[in-house]
Image (cartoon, rainbow, N blue to C red; front, top):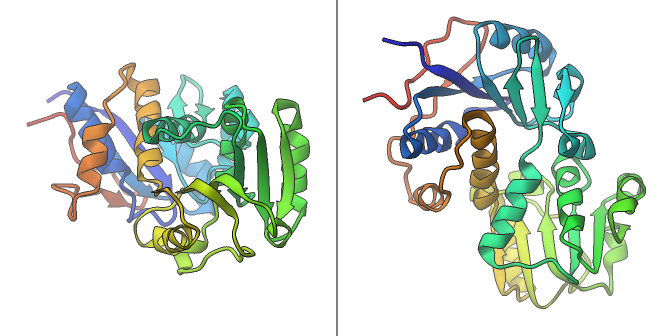
Amino acid sequence: MSQLDRYAVIGQPIAHSKSPYIHAAFARATAQKLSYEALEVAPDTLAETLKQLHAEPYLGLNVTLPHKTAVVALCESISERARQAGAVNTLTRTDTGWAGDNTDGAGFIADLTRLGLALEGKTVLLLGAGGAARGLIAPLLAGNPGLLAVSNRNPWKPEELAERFKPLGNIVPRTHLSLKGDEYDLVINATSAGHTGALPRLPGQVLAKGGAAYDLSYGAAHAPFAAWARSQGAVVIADGLGMLVAQAAEAFALWRGVKPQLAPVLASLREPELPGSGDTHRQPPKPIHPNRIGQD
């Protein structure tokens, strides 16, 4: 039997990852023969693990928390959108190392388009100033909103991001408390607060009439923001599953040269139980015996 092309997602924790299921579905839909795993990688072993996976060889890797910023320095080259974001979520193997890219922003904009949410002339509030938020700023500004406000608990990170990205459009720094009296057409939650059942402390009515609310989190972590959005009268409330699938499709296209359809995979993810998801989960550097994708 011929050796399958090998891919994986790396992070910590990683057992919850839906990436193996998504890429398996893409592979079946596009008749690609490959394997894809979820690999538990601790921060202190990241550099050595990348060397090992290059040697095995893996042809591509997705990168998730907490490695998106640390992996930048370990790439032999990065794309312009990864440079702007200051983070990498997709690695492609070269002869001598890894080329880094960031598909988060493209995936996010693709999902906004799917939802019919236009940015042109709108006021947009981005909650959070970490790596997840940073990867969205350039794509958001490319949509020519009337205003993009970046808000965090303290002012330093939003101020740094506003200064960094101001050549690209109308971006201003905010703190959560300073939002009092402001209203926005689109509120995007790029914080991780929902993973602890919490929500950023926001003052009063922040969402404009007829506004939309988008959460990068999904599943149980989406619940607090969804409840807040309903209390604000949001017309559209979206979780991050659509972005997850769309950014994965961008990475798949980089690796395989074919763009898979998103709708069937997104629909299957919203079913109560993922049929045959069977996410593969392991800890390197043990010998690898990946599940096979694209084989009967």
